Length: 253
Length: 163
Image (cartoon, rainbow over all chains, first blue to last red; front, side, top):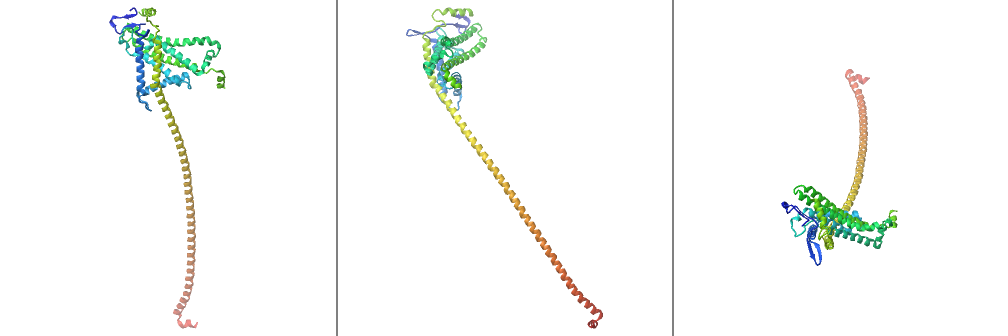
């Protein structure tokens, strides 16, 4: 109970729990139930909206189809800018889903009053405010760029590690570890910090004062989703980039 | 108060739970995410990409078509203009020809008329002259007879006959 701060007057709203989880036991594995509950909410929302948008596709887009086409164009542009015109198409679903999932998670954490639903332990929040989610996404990104590199160049991908100079080898190897680490911690830290700041402010002044911070939180949430997707696309693009000296000279000649 | 929150957060990390509690949530979340990618690929990315590409194709084709038709129209318009110009030139030519011909005819007719008039005048003058001569001649004749008669009247017939 130490990490539950409570002001008795605002028992429902002014409550702050950190690091408490609703544990579900699956076999001898433990999972964080509250993360799955909110992530299922997010996934259901995404699937329903995308089905509704594509149920009746018209040449002249209207309403939801128009909106989702706008989102898709945005994602395609993002992937095209980072990965390049030639290779970006197969990566649109991965990068786009990263963006949509993180974005909707962040905003649902900020906008949907999950906290009004009481759980036996822990509380519902954005799935991205749990380190497991962000690490999972970051590791998938790592796998994705390794896969992209190997499928494009085969074992020649290891050539990337000694480009442009062999001296870079240790740094490139370290980079493979720092990339998922920075990706996951950036997202996790931002979202958790945002929720904590809002929580603390609500705890102190439960009226009006937290609103600007909440608005700022929405902004950072969107930015974080964009950053995550952009970086993932950039890593994938980097892994597939051509470094071959001969080819490069040939191209520039 | 915020201090205590941070401290508490750090404190709980050691026990069960805590901020950095990594467990089976991680792989399950990854699998779940991959499923989401597959589902969205089928329900969102593929159909909408197809729709967008088809629309692009449609627009490009229409644009190409329209451009072709525009160029054809322009060609036709220039052709018509050219034809119009030739027709105008021809019509001007025809008008000029007709005018020239009409002038020529008019001049000819005027000349003929002038000539005829002159001829008639000359003829008339000749006739007048002739008649004048005739009249003078007959007058002279008459003068003779008249003077004979006058003398007869004055002197009598015998006298005249004697002479």
